[in-house]
Length: 431
Image (cartoon, rainbow, N blue to C red; front, top):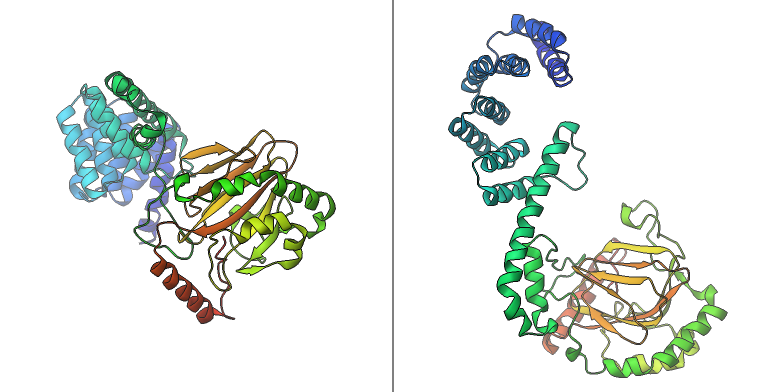
C-alpha cells in the first residue's frame, strides 16, 4: 500500500519531465509507475504521452485509448486522446473525443481550445471564433496560466478579434446608409448594442450594495429631460464655484476623507484612499441632516439645494457635499447602495484630464455642465491633472419611482436602520 501511495508523486514527476523534454528521466519514472500499477489509467496515459512526445502517435493512441476505456469519466484522458487523433489526422475521432471531454466537463479549457482549433482546420472560422470566445470566458481575468497555454490563448483571442473585425466591416457596409438617416443621439442605444455584440463594450447592470429596487430602467447617465430644474443649478455655477474656492482656500481643514472604513474591513479596492485626503469632502447635508456650519459658509449653494427635490429618508438622505479629488488620483470602480435615488454631479473646478466612467460610457467633466447617473452601476473617476478637481454632488429621487414607492422606501429604510441599530455597520444611503 505504501508503494501505491507513491504513484501520484511519480506520475507528477513524469509529467513534468515530459513537458520539459527530459524523456530518459520520464521513461524511468513511468517504468517505476508501471511496476506499481501496470493497468492504472493514469500510468497508461503517462506512457502514451511519452510515446507521443517521442513521435510514436500510433503507440500513444493504443495506450491512451486503453486509459480512456478504463476511466471514461476523466475529461483529461479524452482531451489527450484528441491530441493523439490530431497527430494521426483522424478528424472525426478527434471531434468525438473532444465531445466526450466536454460532456464530462463543459468548461474544460483545453477541450474548448482544441475544439476551436479543429473547426479552424475544417474551414469553419466563424464557428471556431464562437468556440474560442467560450473558451476565453472560462479564464478568470486574474488567472495565472501555465506557459504552455500562453500561445493557444493568444491564438484564440486573435481569432475572436479577427472574426469580430470582419463582422464589424460587414455591418458598417450594410448599415452605412441607414445610420446616416439618424442622429448620433438616436443611435446611442443601438451602437452600444452593436459594440457589445462585437466585444468592444459590455452591458453593465445595477448592483446596489444595499437596496435594489426592481423594474427601474438601468440607465448609466439619465436623460436631462427628467430633471427640469437642472438648468437652474447650472445657472448658479459661478456663484457655487466661488464658494467652493473660498472653502478650499480658507477652510481646507474642514475637508475630511470620503472613504473612512474602520481598520480590518476587507475592502481591497479602497486600500489607497481609506482615511486619505486625496479624496476629501465638505458635507453640506449628511445622512439626511443639514450641516449648518458648512451651509452658512456657502449660502448660494444652500439656496440652490433648498429648492431641489432631494432624496429624503430620515437619518439617511439627502447627501450633498463638495467632492475634491487630488491631483494624479484615481477613484477605483465601485457601486453605490441603492438605485432608488440617482446622483447629480455639478462640475465646478475641473482642470483638463479629469474623466468619469459609468458602466460602458466615459465622459469628461466640463464646468457648468451637470449630469445625473445611477451610481449602482459600476463607476470610477480619474484626475490626471496636476491640480485638484472639485465638484458638487447630491442625490435626488429616481424619477421613475412613484410618490407611493418613495413613501414606502422611506419607511422601509428607516425600519432596517432601527432593526440593525447598534449591532451592525450599515451602508451609507448616500454611498
